[in-house]
Amino acid sequence: MSAALDDVTVLDLTQSFSSALSAAFLADFGGNVIRLELSAQERDARQVDGSWDHEADLIHRNKKSVVIDPQQDRGRALLAELAAKADVIITDWMKPDLQALGLDYATVCAGNPGIVYGRASAFGPEGPDADRPFIDELAAARTGAMPTLQQPGEPPVYTGAGAMHTSVLLAFGVVTALVHRQGSGEGQEVDTSYFAANMYGASLDLQAFLAIDEGQRERLMHPISRLDVSNPISGSLYPSSDGRWVTLTMPDTDRWWPLLAPAVGIDVDDERFNSHEKRCEINRHELIHELEAGFQKHPGSHWRTLFSEKQMSADVIEQFDYPAQDPQVAANKYIMELDHPSFGKVNSLGFPIFMSDSPARLKSLAPCAGQHTASVLHEVLGYSEDEIYQLTTEGVVV
Image (cartoon, rainbow, N blue to C red):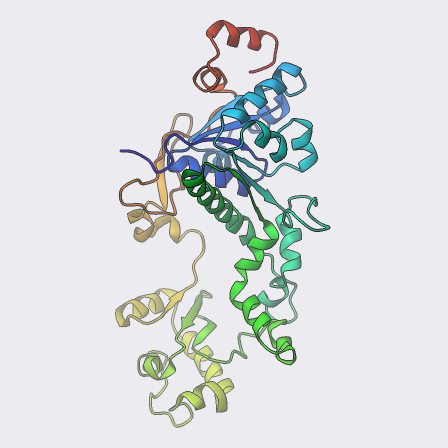
């Protein structure tokens, strides 16, 4: 079965989780992803305590590993040869580091004008902060969303979601550039940033902020207490008797009230709540407290069963142990059981994208550093066994 990105060679020059995962997504769909590691220190960093390196097996799955010493002239020449053969480069390295090795976009493009050069940055390719370090927390701090996520009086909340958004946006940008190249023959530079990714993570609220009058913007800049939501049965949270939280998403209260009211022990004809206006405006706070008391009568398992039976737009907020055993997760291969050669059966995240005819595949776990150096030099660059042996003897490659 063919894969969507068969015959696309990708040079992986990444250091962060998010950028490495972006390259892994391309590998999942057939990309020939060659991960470049430059030093013995980097090579040995994964060998910590002999335990399973679960992070590496997620972000470096389906990749090949090449170790080249860039301190030697011959090593830098090999880097240039690999860049000239690549269809795609994915990197999050700082620009001065790339320039020092001749792996910046301008240098690579001069010898390989069809290159699709995907770079993840902190704050974007232009502007006064274009060269700031690639750290998601710093970008998230500027986005505006962190002070709105917590309950009033609590510290701002950092979700870490910007890193995942960056992974997806970078892979999407690279694939889009490949489609453009297919028709035009032209390569190009692609950039997405933690800043942009975090902004789009908050796009619903940020777009609303940009759209409304300046005088109304203040209400979007501060957290809202769960006991003061505008609609008590939409976007609201209530604790159950065992401490698990219930989330309700029922903006059309006229539709859902006849099901919700009896479930929590409220008379559906209660005059305090018998219209949308009363539920969401006149007696809003009173309804919130009634729901708070109602949901605390039963544990989370009771509410999940009831929501499922009544097909209500609500659910119980779970911890990580739930998706690990959810049949829906297994059916869609969002988590896969792997036969690890060193650690036996282990579970790892699977593929978040379904494609009916060219699906993602797990061909290999994360490689050992330098595992594919010889094969890449031979298959991609055409080096002979004797030439590879000489480069190895000289310490240019491992």
